[in-house]
Length: 126
Image (tube, rainbow, N blue to C red; front, top):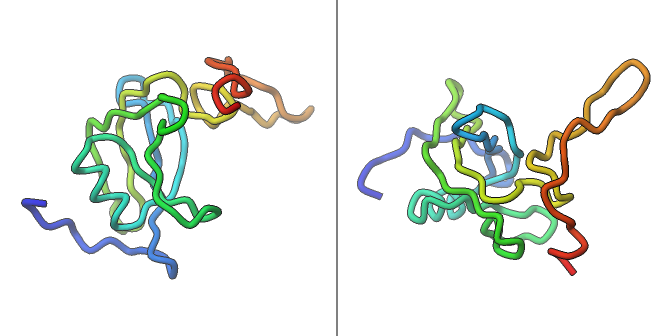
């Protein structure tokens, strides 16, 4: 890196939440965790990389599905404990096939699906 980032406030596991947003529409697509390596790779490649807590490893968004995120900007919140990343999304962000992971809306009568599926996850992740 040719510049120095402000000191980020990582959690006890060395992670920081990253909120991913469609840079054109402003729609929130997903939230995932990053460690220093994931952030460095994201900056270097301009594609989002994250740290999987369940698999304990780095991963490139879209490495299996091909639905990559092209990074347009990265912002740091005022407390330096959350990242906001603007992307151009190829395909869908959600592994369940929806454009955004936030495809369910809570209503007084229950939960309603408000997103449309972009792909069939059984075909992509078979």
